[in-house]
Length: 195
Image (cartoon, rainbow, N blue to C red; front, side):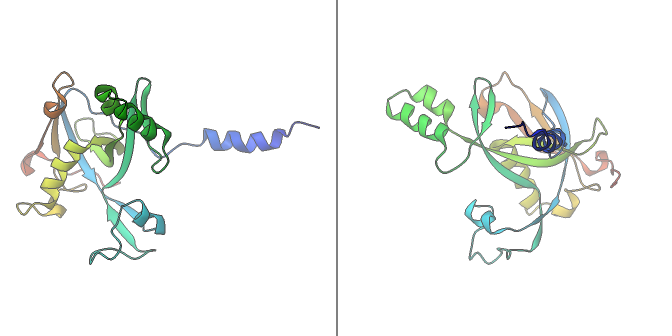
């Protein structure tokens, strides 16, 4: 039997293909980030994953294109880094529950999957390209407070002509105090190139 090198040539092309963008990691200190929307075509499994609520008055139809700002990913933080939770039947979730049931609350809580929101951002101090920024739930919630609040029009916050979020990060602080999120003054938020 001969080795099928053609099969692996195809696989190599797939492996070497660029993946969904580059990532922005928030640094300790002050981060100035502009949030951008992206178009998403609603799929049937979006409802099963909880991205949309079936029967909700504002729920889109399958096939509709919606402008969104995030994708929720559940993540397990392990010694070697972050591992995406696969949802139902996830072996890491089962192990976390087993450890918690055995009474090791500290380790079990560390293993439990946490919500992380991937948001398209531009670091306006770097004047770089758009990147995906994984935001912890606390930061994402603060960003949403501004976007959905009555004090601001979302169109004045999101996009090339929007405003920057000032996100201060202190990795030495306790988790509840690690981030502080504010909205930058409109006069200090420069318009960005839409290209």
